[in-house]
Amino acid sequence: MDPIRWGILSTGNIANQFAKGLQVMDDAELVAVGSRSQEKADEFGDKYNVPHRHGNYDDLANDPDVDAIYIASPHSHHHEHMMLCLNAGKHVLCEKAFTLTADEAEECINLAQEKGLFLMEAMWTRFLPGIVTLREWLAAGVLGKIQYMRIEFSFKGNYNPQHRLWNPALGGGSLLDLGVYNVAMASMVLGLPDSVDSHILKAPTGIDQQTTIFFKYNDGAVATLMSGFDASLPMQTLIVGDKGWARIEHRFYEGKQITRQIHGQDAEVFEFPFESTGYQFEAAEVNAGIRAGKLESDIMPLSETLALMKLMDGVRHEWGVLYPVEQQA
Ligand SMILES: NC(=O)c1ccc[n+]([C@@H]2O[C@H](COP(=O)([O-])OP(=O)(O)OC[C@H]3O[C@@H](n4cnc5c(N)ncnc54)[C@H](OP(=O)(O)O)[C@@H]3O)[C@@H](O)[C@H]2O)c1
Image (cartoon, rainbow, N blue to C red; front, side, top):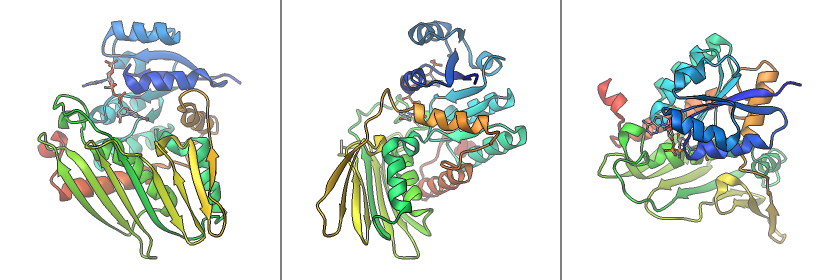
C-alpha cells in the first residue's frame, strides 16, 4: 500500500506537532511543506526531512506529489487556505476553528463536495484512544442517561493585542480557540443542544476573553461550557449520568486519564497513554477516508462542524463579537 502523501501549510507551533505525529505512521509520508517564507520552509524541511519545501502556499497547493494538505494557519486564514487547496484538487484536514464564520465553512464544504475531495475539521481529540473508549462506554450505556456536563478550557494568557489569540484580524477569542473543543465535546456526548444561553466578557480588542455557554436539551440534560484566557484551570470534562459519572482529567482534550465511578462501586482511574503528539490519530482518519473514497468522516462529520460554527456565530453575535470579515459584510 502506497503511503498517503501529506503536505503541511504553515510552519507554526501546531504544524510542528502534526509533523511529529505523521512520523509514527506507517501509511503516511510528509512530502511537502509550504510557508510564507522560503527560509522557514527550508528550516521546517530540514527538521522533518521533507523533500519539497515551498516558499509560498500556492506552490504547495499545486504540488502534484501531494495528496492531502493539513492547514495550520490562524483561523482567520482557514477559509482562504482551504479554498486554495481544494481548488487545487487536494484533500484537506483543517485546524480548528474550521473557519471564522458558518458562511465561510459552508463555502468550503460545498467546494469539497463539488470537487469530490475529503475534508475534515482537525478536531484531534475525538480520535484519541481515551475519547474513543469514552464513546464506547457511552454507547454501551455504562454511565446511564447523561444529565449533566461541565467543561472548562482556560489558561492564563498574557494580553497582547497583536497575538493571534487577542487580535480580531487573526480570528482571536477564547470561543474559537478553546471553546470550540467544549462545544464539540458536548455535541459528541449529548448531541446538538435544543437551546443555548451564553455570557461573554470582552477584551479591549473586542474579542471574547471569556465565554460561558449553557446548553439545554429538551430531555432535561444540561451542559455548562467555559473558555477563557483569564486563569489556568484544571481543564477537565465532567460527564454525569444516572448510573455514574466520568471525568476526563487535566487537559481533557488529550484524553490521557479518565476517572470513572459507577454508583455503588469505587472510583476507577483509566490511563490512555499514546506515542508521539497524538495528531497521528486524526491523520489516520483522513487516510482511511481517502482510501475508502469518502468525502468526510463519520466521527467528525461536516454537518456537525457546520452546525457548531452556526452555534458559535450565534453566541458571538449576541454579544457583539464580530470579526473584520463580518463588519465588512
Ligand atoms: N489541534 C491543536 O491542538 C491546536 C493547538 C494549537 C493551535 N491550533 C490551531 O492551529 C492554528 C495555528 O495555531 P498555532 O498555535 O500553530 O499558531 P502559530 O504558532 O502562530 O502558527 C501559525 C502559522 O500560520 C502561518 N500564517 C499564515 N498567515 C499568517 C498570519 N497572517 N499571521 C501569522 N501566521 C500566519 C505562519 O506560518 P508561515 O510563516 O510558515 O507561513 C505561522 O507560523 C490555529 O487555527 C489554532 O486554533 C490547534
